[in-house]
Amino acid sequence: MGAHRLWTHRTFKANFWLRAILLVAATVAGQNCLWVWVRDHRQHHKYSDTDGDPHNASRGFFFSHIGWLMVRKQPEVIALGKLIDVSDLEADPLVMFQKRYYKTLFVIFSMILPMLFPYYVLHETLWTSFLISFVTRITVLLNGTWSVNSVTHIYGNRPFTKDMLPTENEWVSMLGMGEGWHNYHHSFPWDYKAAELGQHFNGVRHIIEFCARQGWAWDLKSASRAMVKYRATKRGDGTHAQYGWDSPDENNNQLKTEEDDYENLKKLAEADFVGPVY
Ligand SMILES: [Zn+2]
Ligand SMILES: [Zn+2]
Image 1 (spheres, rainbow, N blue to C red):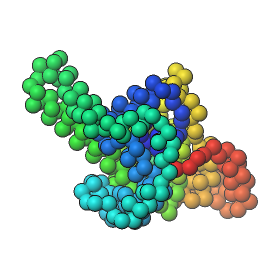
Image 2 (image 1 turned 180 degrees about the vertical axis):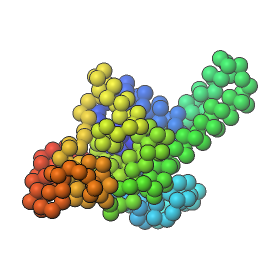
Image 3 (image 1 turned 45 degrees about the horizontal axis):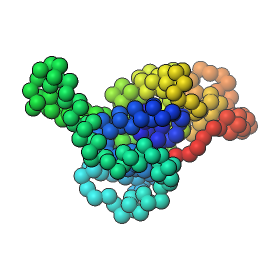
Image 4 (image 1 turned 120 degrees about the vertical axis):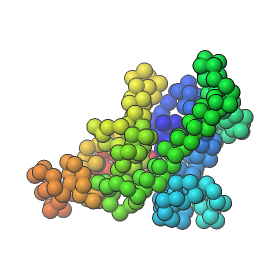
């Protein structure tokens, strides 16, 4: 929620305390400091599945899942990474504090603190607490996150944009609390839902909406129905439940044949655009 939907894509704004909590959560997750994570992820969106993408899925499942972390970055990736704009992160004192003290914060928040509950409350040994609360937790979490880079760039349908690798994958969404609706996300990266309204397994969306109701988050950006419909009918692979080729929606069937309607829908979609960007 923090590293991805707040800091990378700026899909909503958050007050200091929510940002602080999300920063701690990102530290507990142990996936490098936010500065590095966000830069790599912006680069992934900008150069998706090409030689400029740090976890280029065109190089196969293993490389995009974990292989990219086992080798030195390609020269193209390093060169293009330097061009990614991270000035907003460098203006955020919380992010820069975490970058500066990341190793210490990682040991405290991701290794030591999670071990205290099983050790003190459940009276487990230190070794068992370490294996369960750190090793097992981080293994499951990392594989869940990596699946977004590997599984959802290979397996699933592409109802919003057919000419890209990212897919819609229910299993990854279930594991990743909504991060597996990846064809939608790559089509509308600035949408806080990272999925269409009504799609299931999207826990992060509900947490963001809860925070907005409390007044901790605001300016939630989202794609309108016109934008989604335009995109699905114009560039999707025809598998969209409502706007797909086999959909009984007569209006939609007309849209598939009349270019003028595309133009009207495009105008509506452009009027609704709230983006940035990444
Ligand atoms: Zn992706
Ligand atoms: Zn993203």
